[in-house]
Image (cartoon, rainbow, N blue to C red; front, side, top):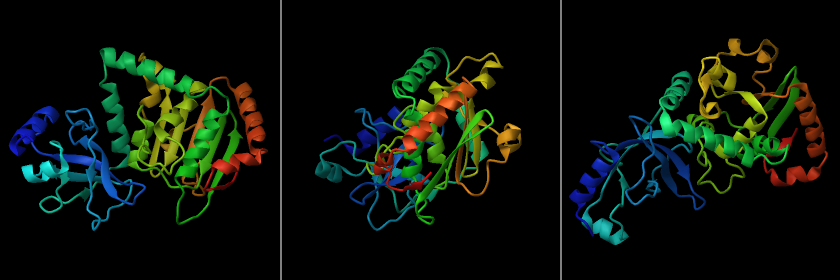
Length: 318
């Protein structure tokens, strides 16, 4: 077992930090144990991995209670040699609950979305080309059937019920040249937004009670659409290929959120964003009315099949 000071110095160098202060998301596993995951540096928001390649997670003592899915500023430390020997792990990392207890983070929606946009716009060279190719491949590989993205939207609604409301009610409707999907499940959090703008497993990677993966599954939308708007939880942003192309930029637009005021939305869908639903997704298919007609036929076929409700635990009706 290596000495404590040796591990501390290695980690500070490996992570390029002076102190072990990070942003993290609180989660609860199937056994009811709390832990912090999705641990990131406060400077550039990059994920924290251990030198052995594993992703860092930090357990939380059972007597401490935090809000699930909420982001916190946490401080961690490397315990003494005796404790690490007990766990048989040089890289045992514990939560500092005394000197610097976890502090809830609040981020204004607009500044958060714009920070994600800036972060992605800084990618250049092989990183840019790799992400463009990866997201295009993902969008096609997970959308081999025309109804795939519909099931993904339903799954995401089912995975986030609002316990205060009860059963989730969802709505699909065609408004002009747009498909509008809405539900009254939980509104989006910052972590949900980050998951949509990611190519990893999203925000459900440790929650085996959830059906889908908001990060990966959502990408199926982009096989037939290059304009998607999200309005939820104070966030309003879009994924818009033409926005970037009009500026002469060829990029992985499917991951880059563009903050959008409600007044900037197409007039025909502005009044669709109301108080009756917590989540609104507006989709404009590239093939126009012919694709909308195909969506309508697919909806009818799916919703006539009562078996659809078998895999949904919280969605009550459409």
